[in-house]
Image (tube, rainbow over all chains, first blue to last red; front, side, top):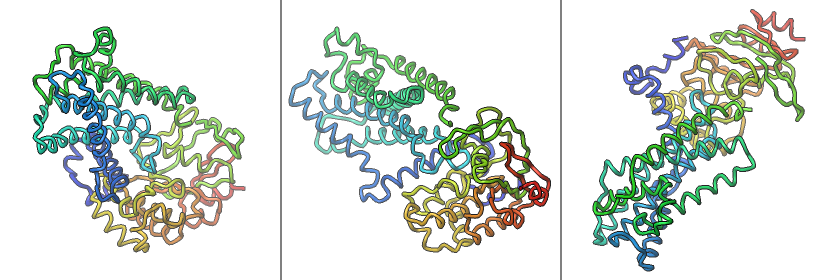
Length: 274
Length: 204
């Protein structure tokens, strides 16, 4: 049967790389194909194209920037633009990855009928897209601010990449765990999605650990997103205080959630098929 | 393997502790009465559903099941769907598109959104694209509902590629015309035979 598989070899791209790396290349090809398909479906007809993806976060950031400035919110260094961007960009990346994982495999639109494409690929494609689009947003949003002569700079690249990787990792792991609970207890599905609001309120988008009341800070500290939000603000503004937060804590959360989610998903996959 | 299912809303045992071996490098017809489990069997082969007990053992890559479900995204044109399928398997989308356009007779229909295409036409287009993707064995459900001309083209492509096909049929005459071996589903079991004629003799 090798003949059947090789028949299309003249159509194959990167044949040498594909032979060397096998499964890893196949995985990347599927993710790339799914991302491109989603982009064409969502933005192919839109004159603004993928710029639409930046519209909602931009409007929300702008509204909150004015709100924080107007209410003279207690923000370290009075860096309102940085405070807003650092908190919201991380939360947006997290929630986009969560939604992609929670909903991603539900409407495959035929993709999973192709051999080798699974619901997990659909989820991973959504998560990868969330990562890319929010990293671009974190950098692109600085350009108009510079044009408006705001005192801002492009964020530290390695720290931003690490921050966003952990944010989407948390979203992916949390989405896997919640969707597994959804399979175990279908009646709870509407409530499971609402849990992200609790995460949102305590994610540090509205407050910094440094300025919030100490009694509140000692509880909110446990939300791994607030650590990432504070570090993203630091990535934008090196004078931002980060002595209360750590990158190891959200990293451990991300790894723990992903492993738990994958194990639950594997244990429940037979139930999903029936 | 054993597989439970539902027939007209009532729970039923589709396959009961059965074992069967089918060749994947020939044209194999699976015949059975309505409700006997032909489609369920195809779904088991393809991995779209899993048995309650037992398993499907194969190192072959099975295609999507033609005439069952749509692997074309309704929001994309046929050409865009070809591009997607090509990218999934690491093929050159332009080369695959050119090949499809060369052998098909659907012309401008490839540029219409798949959701706007009539069902039989979309299924024929999907079957054609599927035949060009790098699978080892092609699955076709309910072969009677296939476009005859496209089915002939697909058989020619598979012959050239030395790839196999497993199709389900209600009509024994169609099985006799196209298949090289036959199987029959009866009494919650799949019976494999060495020839189509032998299968037909046992297909009451």
